[in-house]
Image 1 (cartoon, rainbow, N blue to C red):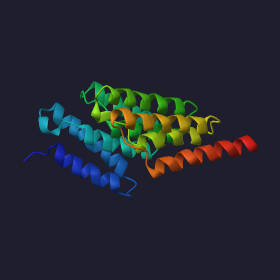
Image 2 (cartoon, rainbow, N blue to C red):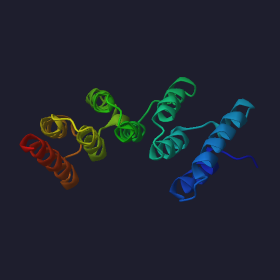
Image 3 (spheres, rainbow, N blue to C red):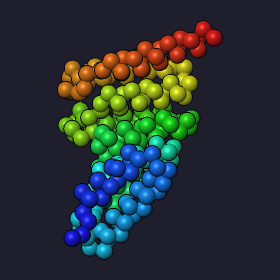
Image 4 (cartoon, rainbow, N blue to C red):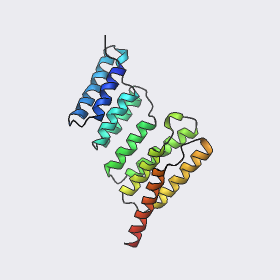
Length: 191
């Protein structure tokens, strides 16, 4: 019996949940093993979206933005796997954690691509509450003065996507992030 993607994904999922410091390195090694086995002819070991998203998530959690970007590009170019909502949310989260000056714009760019893809009928990139709150949070973390107005604009976009295209309705958590961004912006204005 040879291992297949389901076997590998179960292991990756458990390592992703692990608190073990070596888990991320083991996940990367396992993904490389999948690639090696696939290239040697085990078609059942081909890395799939679940495997790549798991490793991307571990890298993002560790603040490794460049490796997340490289892995997502590899997923598209080598394995012809288009990113889905989860993939894009991981990438937005990685940008948010990066604290790089261009992070809010990059997060918004990824989000806008998701929104446009969904409007064109691609259900796999449907922005969810996590998508919206992650982008708003990115503006807040970047200390941007326009975080409040940006959050309101994104909330309005979410409401329009819900109303016009069947997107998710804003959750309580989403409203809380918007209120937080407005309060943060107001505190900066009064300082």
